[in-house]
Length: 199
Ligand SMILES: CC(C)(COP(=O)(O)OP(=O)(O)OC[C@H]1O[C@@H](n2cnc3c(N)ncnc32)[C@H](O)[C@@H]1OP(=O)(O)O)[C@@H](O)C(=O)NCCC(=O)NCCS
Image 1 (spheres, protein in one colour):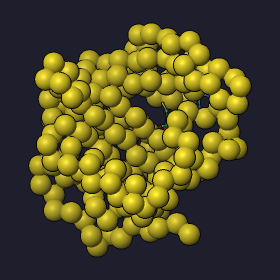
Image 2: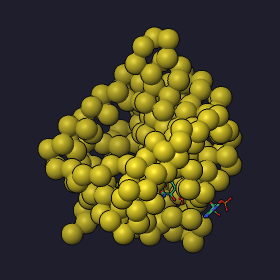
Image 3: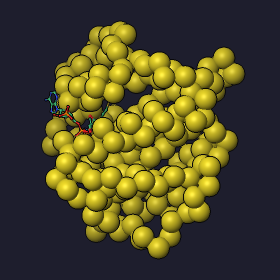
């Protein structure tokens, strides 16, 4: 059973927390907001549904291959919230129809030399793709990245993931390299394209 996200528990909106309302391409309300500690159950359902999806679609650009436990998700979320508080990460939760339907994260480099540079990952839930949710999250992410001093971003995408490549190019990323056969799945190799953007 999926976990509903309660509307009553919004975190206080300070400089590290945000919440904005949008609409999906089919007219549903879309909320983009900061993650919060009580998202654990809903995020666990979300990430494990992505792992399930890999069974049906071996080409899908989802690299996590093992379902998480609630304890692991709690630890992951707590670490993420800590990084956000320190200004070293950006995270966006997309919510529609009372559930988490997307997630975007950016981590800045660990060393001082790389602190201006972020790595981005994004996913949208299966039944909510092609509705503009990815585009809305990317736009918000670029704004939030600047706020924490990120000046350049990179990401990796499967070469066969034309929808994702389209989204990234639409939001200003350029292709800067290709790693042949980085992914091996079910005996088949997939190349990775590296993309980069200056903010
Ligand atoms: C990739 C992903 C994050 C995009 O999010 P989304 O909410 O579906 O994206 P949007 O609806 O905002 O935009 C999708 C765009 O791709 C276009 N598109 C869809 N299928 C396409 C295809 N086969 N080739 C090219 N473009 C395509 C859509 O027309 C739309 O472009 P437009 O806004 O210019 O019309 C999402 O589909 C997803 O999570 N996919 C599975 C996991 C994944 O691939 N994650 C990315 C890993 S790098």
